[in-house]
Image (cartoon, one colour):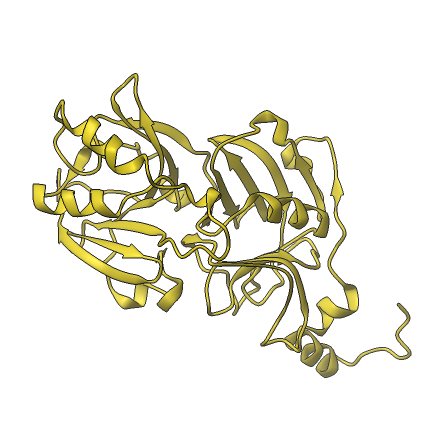
Length: 326
């Protein structure tokens, strides 16, 4: 595209604020390459779904690396370069879920700018989508991706897919809790949980028009409380009983039962790079039997269980977007 005259600094700034630069440059097409992750240049990505063809997907955005890591059933299948929020418009860190998908989305804020293959993370404007990648944080808070990569990612995400945006990324671990969630193990509990979970779908099986609620459970050591959130609404809370030590910024994604160990399989991730070495241990926390039963009633494969040492305060939520912002 040829521009008839050189833009002045003030015009350039105004155009950038309106999203015009993205429209001038267009989404970066991107290139699938075969090289080491650390050697990826802006617009390059790797994509190897054959490494793990099935299972739940989770996405980790590593802000310090300016890279997006995609895991399926705990195995990394893709890495892409990205561009996150620039100074003054920083991308929030924390745990989010995909709230909406739109392959042909346009911005309602920035001059109708195209945002192809949009996975919405907050109703306030944070999303994963295709865009221009200059090699540094340059967006108004969204995470820009190469167009070709965004198409592939769009095909495997679903409503409820967890997206962890962290200062530093960490690979997930697979853990099994001896029993179910926040309760003492008993021989009858495993069968009871199986009866509860078997009729329920994983979010990856849900159609966009399905009205199933996505459950998030948050345990706060600061407030000594646990809350249950369905979609964007708090539906119940109860006491947290734990060992008194910091819980660490961890998120656990429920896969389902492990019949050999007679427990529940979880994918465990850390959403704050400063605590990436903290041990994943679900046995440290529990609640009273009455509230454990309430959690069980709201649980489904794909639900998210979060540890935090932050207060359960509205300022830590982003309205209807909530899971948790660090």
